[in-house]
Length: 357
Ligand SMILES: *Cc1c(COP(=O)(O)O)cnc(C)c1O
Image 1 (cartoon, helix red, strand yellow):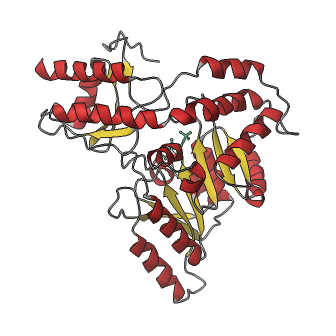
Image 2 (image 1 turned 90 degrees about the horizontal axis):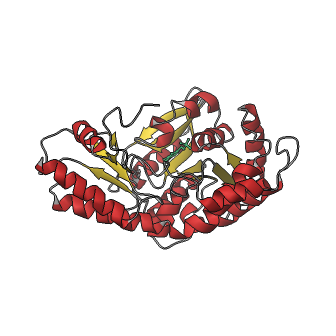
């Protein structure tokens, strides 16, 4: 690890790099210490069973399966639904295409096909799905690739935490099913999308055959993702996870944190959107190009405020203790459970001072 003080960073920094930088709450650590556990590879761990059932219930699916990461959940979802010679479609810059080093196609053997964005950044056009489905209607020779699965991402990380409007999500999934394709939903931040639209996570998950959610994105758990779907799909997924060495023996220690995340952190998740809007509003006042965020991710461009490039801007903010990352041509700031209003205002003050300096 780089020594922060030595590298010239403020030590009392406000960490907006991601909603994954959170500390597990005292309640989580206590639940982890006291969790009832058993071997979840040769049998079942009772706390793990409870978490998987709870997640499946929240998402309105028959069953759930714990994974150590969202990337593993996505890979397993494709492993059980896509084969060699199939292709799977996902919107441009989807995590599954751009941020997982190709594992999905490598392990599942499917060929990724990138879909353009429609009006809503991060969301494919219904018309494009129609066109691909119609092409298939003409019948295909034995040597042609077969479309097999549509993967959607809600919220879309790279687009700036954008929500798939629920009616559009339902329509996209219905079209895919009509065409005979499977539907996977990468819902690492589905919680945020559901809360912002005042619907349940199950409603937001719609008709997807498989859904990935994360416990460590805004919910404060140290680790964990769940893949949810039909019992039959999850039975196959458990075998696929085993192939990746993804079983966790006394997994209840981790599941206990996840249960606290779902019980105590999920109800407050929409606070992150409110904080993000406050931050974006303050940045606009300073002259930055910071559109109103749909959820907890803010994409900021220098705008009128600064001549610096996004990466120079990020470097200067990191130096004054407003920790952030760049994503594409923007600086990405993410709100989460470990920042509050006063810290957001403090970050804005520092950024303003930095502009004057
Ligand atoms: C973070 C993220 C993932 C992967 O989660 P990891 O636990 O980091 O592997 C998948 N999809 C989206 C949209 C994400 O933001």
